[in-house]
Image (tube, rainbow, N blue to C red; front, side, top):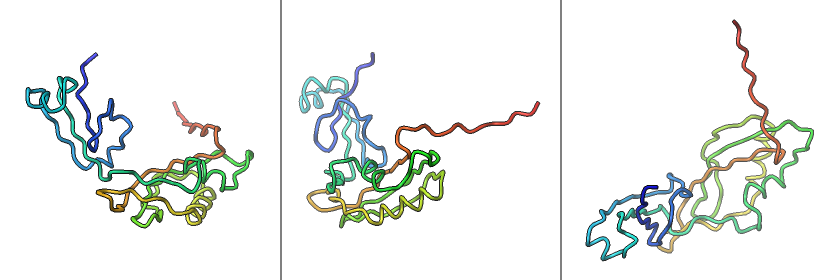
Length: 162
């Protein structure tokens, strides 16, 4: 197994950066595994250091409910077990004042689900905005919602004529 560098994200040590959305990264700086770097960061820096600065210090948080935001929305959208499996994926932005705005629709398999989701988003409470240097900043994210929960999307059928 290859040796990993030391990751420093917004000043904190991380084992991996796999969970960080690349779209929230503002800057990446790689430091060599030299004497100066090891003296500054300790023996963990023997394979180099990767400094990552995010666009925010703390991410936006949905504080109106203990559920994840997608689960919160799923509970507010009327979608029965007999309704077809449908999915919508969209980019959203949490503004500095905590309002959620839709930036772009990436996928929608059902117009009814789309309408119901947009209504639920419109009625949803404000978020606690992301912060940078103690001040609110806007932050974007991706929402994936598939209903009914737990059911797989049907596979597309391809017709091959020979």
